[in-house]
Image (cartoon, rainbow, N blue to C red; front, side, top):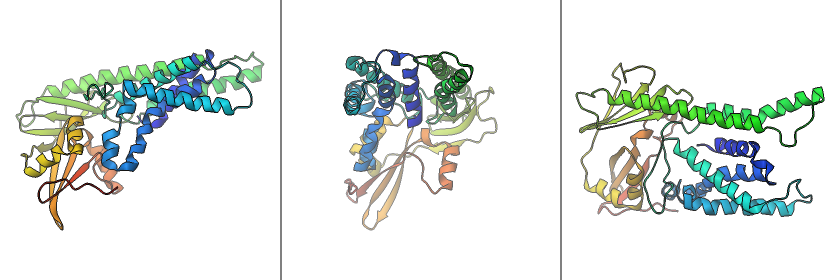
Length: 340
């Protein structure tokens, strides 16, 4: 998920009652809920390095132990710089547990979208994804922002009528917001299952589907992007889970599988290629022959990010297919590394 959802979820966890146990609980939970994305700095070492380490160690159960420690160390530094002691004494062991819990919520949120996570890394490189929520989901924003803003509004009303102020306001609103997140996941999971069942229930150009997937669109729980694998090709289409038939107008986008070549096999053996094919669910390749200097450029992309709606928006701003990677080879099929 994008950073705002992670931060909002962490803040609501604190306001839901955990802030009654120790000082800096909400601050720690909010920071730690986003802290695993520190791996974004890997992009400065190059796009390939950034891709290989995106949602890597910091998004694993083992890495979260270190990430939580970094967050608590930062909060400890803030505490030492403060001139006044907080109302509650800080309990550093409990704050560390809170930080680790918030890191786990980050992994969980990222698991709900279709990029996926491999939380058991480095012991297992297997990727997991729930495929129910788009990377940006406005419905979650409504719940989570509401959980933080509602107490401010009720506080103003209480001031007007002279009601007694609460020491830790906002617990009920935050819990309602977190329940709203669970409700959103429940609705989307149900519709996701319906979309998958719809994709499995038909033939594609007389071919039986071997594997199907449905990926979420933003905002609309009934709108999905479907990918189907058959023995001969991949097919993609939009799916409405509210109706019993997938792609009733037969607007399939068909991608025939390309035979392996010396260039694609060489690209697969590079570090980037090995990582890509371990991560991709529906991998595709395109090979361009270069003349000056002689060589090859192999593009790697995953059809789960080939949604026509997304590609149309990106093309309008001059962008390329999302999450497309390139391996450059010389005429002898040796990798030509990008310059740092």
